[in-house]
Length: 596
Ligand code: DUT
Ligand code: MG
Image (cartoon, rainbow, N blue to C red):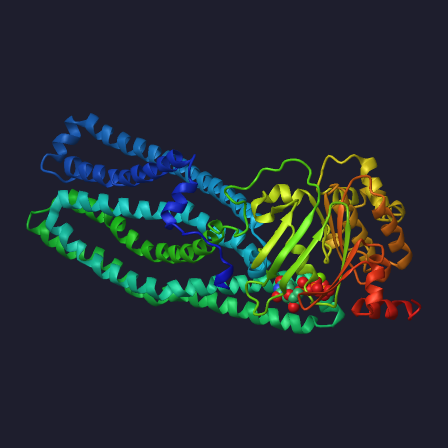
């Protein structure tokens, strides 16, 4: 990923991040942790009572006497064991619920937050991150994070508590035997650390492969018509298969890594009961250890062996979390570079619509050559500026500087006399109606699409703006008129129809500045003329900046600007430019067959 486009603020540690976002559920979550600890300490009670039972009633010196005369104590031990088991089960249930609900809550919150972050990013961000990758971050990666909070942390706490509590209990019963059993632990830790080193990079790679696979799928699904048009299904399938295979292989490799370390861990874990049997046996013979204590030791040996076995899957999941959380946090802490200045002026009223470029230069962040160089011009409120120029000369780049989609690299763009960098983005953009070159409509009704910038727009207004953009006729012919739902990405409409809806959408916010980027390029001449006529008679004042290639569109503009390689080649009215006999004149001659 291109590092220049990551406007990422300093990223705190993962623990801080999780803790910060558990706000509101922290106490609840801690209750879960306490529950886990309690429940695991309670695991020791059964062997404790079993040891008591054996030594008091079965094997001890006074066993027969106790059984005869101390029945109540016997019943108490049994009742305590049953009661504690019940309580333990309840705690397990409760903590399970707590961890699940806290982690889902976290997931919900972070997902919203991420979506919000992504929405607020500037154009550079979208040029840098691919949709499939962003989707992976918001789904798979996020779930790995949730899994950490719900399962991994719980398992760590359980393992540590169980291990520690058991060890303490063992030390109390017989510190020497406990110490001998402890000898195995460092060996297991060494193996686990090696495993961590081995599996960490694999999880990172796995995550990249998944993102690649998703990106590939996403691009082909949205671009399915290109695939079909070029009959490239087989090629695309093979490409996907390749990615899928790689992902699958990496997944297998990651999963198999543990198998390399598993035999060692299992051997060490299994050594414990053997050590206990040998050393414990000797201790009993020597009279150091009672049979009840031995039973407690052997009844709990799993409680130190299992946490060690668990270490493998804990480490595995932890590495997965590490890879995933890095991706999520990168977006979570990314800040758009283009945002309100701290001292931005407040301009709540409708703008007048004056646009001024002062020695503006511009270059894309990743671009080598400047796209615009030292451009200066002014459009007064209510005026119409037409921009012409061959493809790639910088027209779209120029108009994108007005709503501050990108930042100028030199000079100033002023709206109503104020540098756009000193205006509030929301206020600036609410005053600009933009119909972009690539039309994107939502899978919503036509009505909903036109009223996108203002959900309270009354129906008759929607119809009026559709009429302005010469869309009302074809909308009326549609099966459900304005309530017709447009298919995904506007499937079901022709290119020119989409353009007209996008124009109506731009007009519907009654912008002070209307910007049309080749908006009528796919519309026939007749319809275009109709649109030009309506634009002259809008019922609100509006400055218009229109990028167009047709003379019929440009000729009535107050000013025509011809751009060439980021410079203003010619500027003037239709008549002036015809007089000038330059580029504009040549286009006029070309389009009218030299009739001028
Ligand atoms: N460019 C980039 N990055 C972008 C967009 C464009 O490097 O994200 C380059 C391509 C081109 C120059 O900037 O060399 C100007 O592009 P622009 O889109 O402004 O050109 P245009 O005048 O709008 O061309 P067209 O008539 O094809 O829409
Ligand atoms: Mg363009």
